[in-house]
Length: 187
Image (cartoon, rainbow, N blue to C red; front, side, top):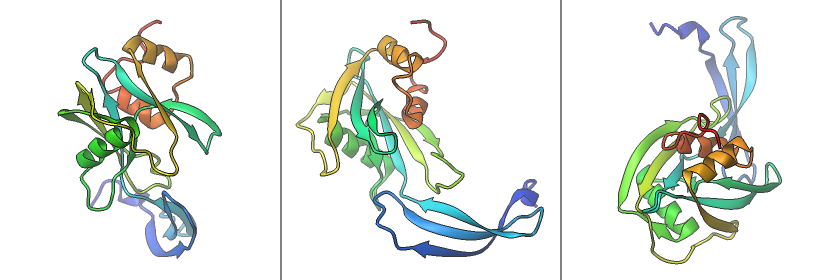
């Protein structure tokens, strides 16, 4: 028996809702509280996995992107990234997203692990990849819903952006912190 068995909520049923959501499918699970035995509705947003890329040039500068984010209503500073297409491996997605969003490519890739974006109501992972010695391969290949500006930042500039509150995208911070020390250094 799993030592955390008493914390599991037993699934009583699921219902999908037809909604025009680009990133997610909306599902309501009926789950029984193991403590009270009461069945409650719980929202799950289903999605394919995501990728985030720390892309370093030969000078060890990180290629960053700026784009408008609808949830917060302003332009954010973050790492390149996107969705894993159905049937695609996360490395292939990372290579594709880096090229599409920035026009850059790499021949040196390392897996940095994965995180759960929000396990309270998301069912997927975000895979972090390191691309080293990136080089310009072509033009940006942005989708209809994208407007992205790229820039290179040194570790010191990234640390300053984190400590100053300009860079606060949780998934970008998670990926970057696997490559750079973002908080201990004084800038």
